[in-house]
Image: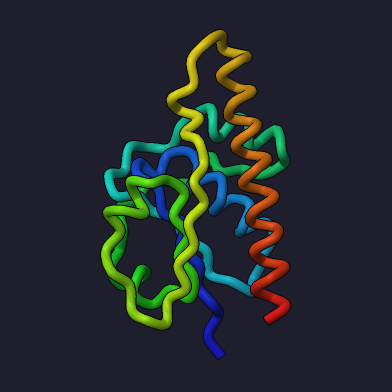
Length: 141
């Protein structure tokens, strides 16, 4: 039996989708194949790495990737984390479950370094909550 596959999409594949991938990998273990990608990959944001490390999840080895049509078309679940990715994501086959989590982009935060990091932490914590809820739902099906 093949593992189910989940794909997290954002524009740059630099913050939100990377954090979602990190939490999903940590929570799903070997039960799910977890991927993330972007419509315009921009490199993994160092602040995303920092706040994920604070939460005990290492994403320092992650890379920013473009959408792979094979992964997109064979995913069981595709989650978009920003409006741009939702609006520009290619069409998926009918059997692919699509979800949208409209989360604020922490990379656009302004202020002091601490204020910016706090925005990253807020988004990180919301992503963790949503990933936990999603896996609880998916594994209960």
